[in-house]
Structure formats: structure tokens, C-alpha cells
Image 1 (cartoon, rainbow, N blue to C red):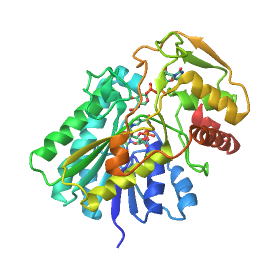
Image 2 (image 1 turned 90 degrees about the vertical axis):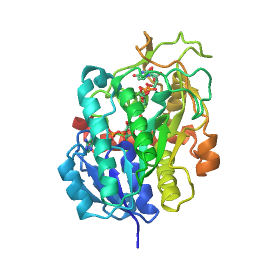
Image 3 (image 1 turned 90 degrees about the horizontal axis):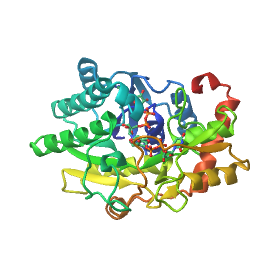
Length: 347
Ligand code: NAD
Ligand code: WQD
């Protein structure tokens, strides 16, 4: 019988791509999402790609009673927990919202798991836990630096909660995945990133500028200590990232490791600058991008890219897509959005 996976935040950007990969690998998926940062329309895109509509319950993970009823209704073999608030700037303005949402959601899941004999949870963490690296590429043993935002702090605290709970003897195993900068969209352009309002992240801002929705991209600083002066990131294709979640849940379901908690960096291992990425967008879209250099953005890390050897060797996962194909997928998705005339969602 197909294994059943609970995917929290499954209508969101990374969650929806992961649901596709899970379904294509033969898993049965139950999505819960409160639609605070996504729409139920995403389910249509997933269905068009996979030919199968995932079960969807509109639920808030912070609602213990509703989550308990969900665990009673379905027997889950494992959980992939994406649901969280993720805007760094907003977390500075509304810290309690972030602490409540991101911490209570995880605590509820961990409380319910042993009660309902669910043993495995994959958790979405972030390279943000490393802060400004002492050296690049950065591996999983690098020190965790004091968080520079409440959002980043929730990821650090969530990692600690998982470690403490699992090591307390609870019958739970976990894989913590630290994503670098996820970008791009499914090659079908049926699903992709759907930022509500003005995008805070680089790639949606680039593609919206390319599409004429935004007038001009501001590049935050060209006076960093990097070859071209702009910041450097490890941009990881979202489908590649999604595939890592299938491998991670499988690793636990098939008891491939004795470790109770494992942490993996998910990145390409290559750092690319903001200006280099703009150049790649111009190449794949065939049009020049209107951008200007402005002041640095407060709180930005100068440069960070992953040492992904552990994921490559232990998990058996490696990023496959080229940056050109990844940027082309982001651009195709942007054009699809325009065609569908759902611009009201993205303005
Ligand atoms: P997203 O906002 O697109 O997806 C998160 C989903 O969770 C949304 O659909 C939202 O409606 C839902 N959600 C939020 N709070 C909820 C709650 N209490 N109950 C139920 N649903 C809830 O974000 P994403 O980019 O897909 O990120 C997924 C996860 O990965 C998050 O935990 C995020 O912190 C983490 N992450 C993201 C990035 C990134 O750059 N996108 C990088 C590192 C880590
Ligand atoms: C990338 C680069 C900007 C927008 C954030 C979170 C991090 C993680 C991933 C969740 C930076 C530059 C951006 C723009 C620009 N998320 N930029 N003009 O800051 O690396 O990471 O998302 O865990 O926690 O902090 O991503 O896409 O915002 O920025 O020049 O309009 O692009 O300065 O150098 P970031 P980003």
C-alpha cells in the first residue's frame, strides 16, 4: 500500500513542488495549509502535472484541536513540515506572529506524533542559521551565529526543539534540511512561486521587472568584498530541492540510518553573484533588465554558498539543473502568470 505523507504548507512554493515529486514517486499526500501565503488554485496545477489531486484540508497547524482531529482521521507514515511564516522583514515588525506561528506549529506536530505513532518528520530549515560565514563553502558543522531576525531565530529554535525532543527519548526521528536560496519553477509552468504583493526576494523581483510589472530592480549594493561587488548566494532549483525531500523521507521510512537527527545543507555548492544572476536572466529571456545599484540592504549577508557533500554522499542527492534552465523556468512561470491574467494576485 502507498505510504501516506502529511505535507504541511503543501500549497506553498516549495511544498507544492514537493507534493508533485512525492506523488510521482508513488506516495499518497495529505496537504494541510491555512492559505495565509498561497491559494487553493495551486492544487489544480499539481493535479495537471501528476494526474492526481492530493487530499487537501484547510487547517492551521497552530490549532492543536484541529491537528489532533487530522491525525485521528488519517494514519500518516511521515511528515514534511513546510508551514511557516517566512518574510524576514515582516518578522522584525511582527515578532510574536512569527514566534507563535513557527514554534507552535512544530510543537503541535511533535506532540501529536508519538500519540498517533508517527515516527518521521522532515523539517524545513535555512542557511540563515549560519549568519555571515567565517568561510565558504559552509558545511553543516559550521557554528550557528546569533540570528539577525525573529524569522531566523525561529529556525534556530525549531532545530533545537527537534534535537531536544528526539534526544529526550521520544520515538521520533528527524531530518533537518537547510535550504540555501530556492529559485525557479516547475518546468511545466503549472506551479511556481507566487509572492503576494511586492516581492522581497531577488528572482521574483527580476522576473516581474522583466515582465513590466515592476519598473526597475534595485540591486542592493555593489561595494561588497566580492569579485563584482554584489552579494553572492547559492541559488538552488526548487524541483531539485523538492526531490531531496523525497529522498529524506524515504531514508527514514526505510531505516537507512541509525541517527535520530540528521542535518543536511541543500545547495548547489556554487556561489553566484546578484549581477551574474541578472546576466543569466538577460541571456535566457533575451531582453535587457532595467536595474540600478542602490544602497546595501540592512542585514544582508555578503556571501554564502553551501558545501553540499554530505547531502551528495550520505543522502545520495545532488542538484542537477543548470542555472540557465532554472532561470528559464522562473521566466516561463512569470509569463504563464501573465497569460492567465492573474496579475491581481501578484501586485
Ligand atoms: P511559502 O510561504 O510559499 O509556503 C509556506 C506555506 O505554509 C504557505 O502556503 C502558507 O499558507 C502555509 N502556512 C503558513 N503558516 C501556516 C500555518 N500555521 N498552518 C498551515 N499552513 C501555514 O514558503 P516556502 O518558500 O514554500 O517555504 C517553505 C518552508 O521553507 C518554510 O518553512 C520556510 O521558512 C522554509 N524556507 C524557505 C526558503 C525560501 O527562500 N523560500 C529558504 C529557506 C527555508
Ligand atoms: C538575495 C540577494 C539581496 C532583492 C532570504 C532570507 C533567507 C532565506 C532565503 C528563508 C541579496 C539581493 C534582493 C532585490 C537585490 N529564506 N537583492 N534586490 O536575503 O539571500 O535570503 O531568502 O529561510 O533566510 O533572508 O534572499 O532573494 O532576498 O536576496 O539586490 O530586490 O539579492 O541583497 O544579496 P536572501 P533574497
